[in-house]
Length: 426
Ligand SMILES: *Cc1c(COP(=O)(O)O)cnc(C)c1O
Image 1 (cartoon, rainbow, N blue to C red):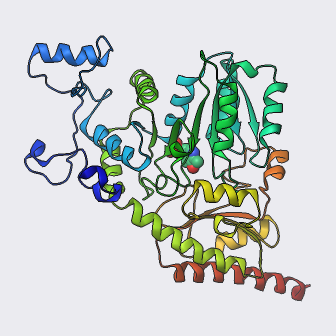
Image 2: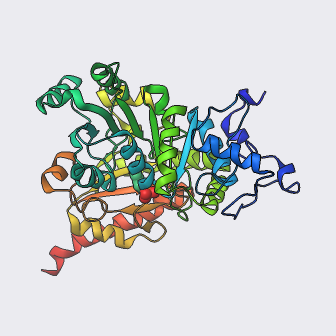
Image 3: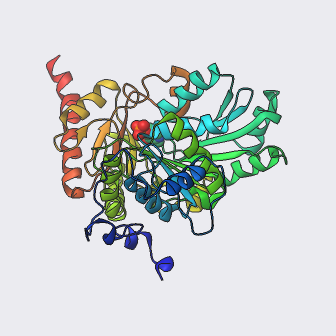
C-alpha cells in the first residue's frame, strides 16, 4: 500500500517506528557517537558487513556501529530522500560541496577526462579546475547552447576521448537559468562507454529538485544536491546529498566513511523536519515566482527577465524544459536598466527582500552575481554567459507575492527618481 503513496504523504513517518523510542511520534535526535552491541557475535557480524567481508543476507540491514558510519537520523533522512528521486540509495553530507567533491573523487582517477557543463557553481568550478587538475584529472567545459556534435568534437580534440569517465552537469545553470539536455549527454556517455569503462553522468539538481525534476529518470546515474537550499529551505543548515544506484552509492558511502564528512545527527534531524513541508514550500515559491516574473516583464526599468516560465516555445530550451521539468521553478534573473550603480541602488532600497547569497529558502533573497557569487569568474566567461553588471538574481520565498511585488516596485521606483533627478541637479 505504502508503495503507492506519494512521497509527501510519507515524509512524516517513512523509515521510523515510534516503538523504537518510547512511542515518540517524531524521530528523536540520536546524539550518540557509538552504539552498544547486544553480544560480541552481533558486533562481529556488523563489522563483517561494514568492511565488506561477507555479502548481506536478503533481509539484513547494516547494524548500527559508530556515527561516522551510520546513525538513525542519517539513515532515516537518506531513506526519505530516496522516495522523491526513486533512487536505490542516498548518501547525506555536511555540505553540498562535500557531496560534490566526494563523488568526483570516488569516480575519477589521475589520467581521466571529465566533461562538465559551464557555468557551474563557483565551488564546483574551483574544485574541478584547481584541485582535480592538480591530481592529474583533465576537465573540459561545454556551454548549454552547444550541440552534441560540437561537444564531441571538443572531446576528440583533447586527444583523451578514451579516458572520458564522467560527465558532470548543472541544470538549470546558475545564475542564468540555461538548460542542459541530459538525454543528449546520455548519448555522449553511451558513445564513449566501453565494456571495461563506465561513463557516469552526475547532475547537480539543487535548483529544481527533488520536486520539479528527477534527473535519474532522464538518464543520469547520480543526482546531487546542496540540501542547504530547497531541501533545508530555512537558511539555517548547510548540507548535501547524492542519490543513485545501490552500487554507486555504496562506493560514495565508503569514501565518506574515510573522509568523515557525513552529516551530523543534528543536521539530519533539521532536514527531516524540513522534508515534511518541502513540497508545499516549493509550490508556493513557484506560484510567487510566476507572479513576480510577470511583474518584472512588464516593468519599464527592467531590460530583460530570465525565467523558465517565459521561454520561447520554438526554442531548444523550451523543448528541454518540457522534457526535464514540471514547473518553471522559483529562481528569476533579471537585468535592470543601467549598470552596477543602478543594480546596487535597487538592492540597497529593498525593505522586505534580504540581500544575501544562497537560495531556495522560505525568505526571498537577492544578490548581484557579477560582484558576489560569480566575482571570481573571468571577464570573457562572464560576457559569454551573460553575467553583466546590471544582473540581479532573485530566489523567491513563500511570502505573499503582493508584498514581494510591492517591495520590488518601490525599489525600482527609486531608480526612476534618481535617473530623473540627476539632470535636474546639473
Ligand atoms: C549552494 C550550491 C552548492 C554548494 O552547496 P553547499 O551546501 O553550499 O556546500 C552546489 N551547487 C549549487 C547549484 C548550489 O547552489
